[in-house]
Image 1 (cartoon, one colour):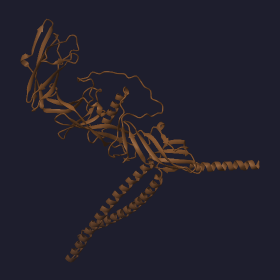
Image 2 (spheres, rainbow, N blue to C red; image 1 turned 180 degrees about the vertical axis):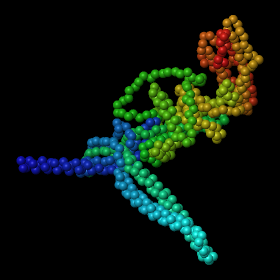
Image 3 (cartoon, helix red, strand yellow; image 1 turned 90 degrees about the vertical axis):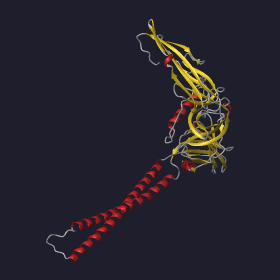
Image 4 (cartoon, rainbow, N blue to C red; image 1 turned 30 degrees about the vertical axis):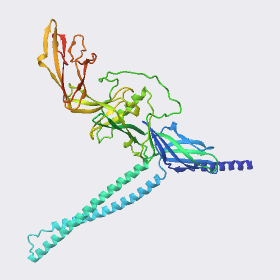
Length: 533
């Protein structure tokens, strides 16, 4: 039993020593090798050298990582005959921060105590000067029974004047010094709060337990998906007078991993990464339609504006919603964009704009006139061969003749359809709308009333070149069986009977003017008022 007891004690000692060996952790901050940024998330690759101990084991803490990751997609590349015993992602204070904060707070506390002592002494001295000044001022009058020689009175006045002046200066100097001490005290307190916040900050860490040949040294690569990163495309479209478009593509990227990406190779990838080893489910592709106000087979997204003092938060929300709706029922092509030059992306979440590439677009300039809304026509650039340029939905900044005209949110049409880029209004292409009162009439017949309305549209081209203009107006549509609308004249226009939209395709030569007349009648029961006409 004695020998058995010694054997168990020896095993216990070995176990304790083994635990001490495993408990020894090496804290490292491996550099970022490259980053692939998705529309939501970023694939980050870090690498470093690992040395195994005499027992062929190593316990490493890789710090300085993102706090929010996809834990199911962590990958570790190891050398041959190496194995990953365990891995753990956690949030913890960075190594050395606790002692750094402790030293900094101790120094600031010493400075604060010295400041308070100096402040108390200066305040006491200021009160002493104030009491002396009050005493002098209370004794500056001579009593009625006292008689002073002129020389004594002059000496008394001179003393009062000099001492009061001296006290005033001393009190002013003390007041300035006290104000400086108060400012210094406020600065010290601000620094103390900053260091206290730093003490509460956490970083992402990976705890890796590795095993392999004893004393072996090899490179280990860590790949993980950070969730707090995203990018979206932004375009600068410079439109020439002949309709040719020079497109510059940028990536609007932001990340909140609290680690700056400085001179790190970046790749911008279209789509979203898989967050599981299991293959995703494929759901049926369903289609739906909505009422469109345009003549194209797609619906334009509304323009989204953001002021300079806002971080474009509202725009990001709308872009995310649009991307989610686009990807919900269709498989988008996968594109990778690699910037030619190195970029810097702050880890604080501040958006950065990174140049990607440039490409030309052949387009045709045309005009859209909406006389019921505005006399000035809208200029459009129509491009057919856009799908070959790997374009994506995003914000487009329009530039003409070196001037920024504005921006809009581009939602791409179906491949094979025409891409329309709005260029804003052109004051030299106008279309007026006037009611022809002489041709308007109202009459009664039987139990109904009938009103006839006529309008004249005048399209004017003030350019020294020929242009194509699409004029759009409307005739009313009825939502009641008691109201009947009859088209009398359209002047060559095409009517959509469902929406009531009338379209005229016109070609105007240089400085040419054309006139369009259309009219319609509306019948409704007597004794009723017609609204919406």
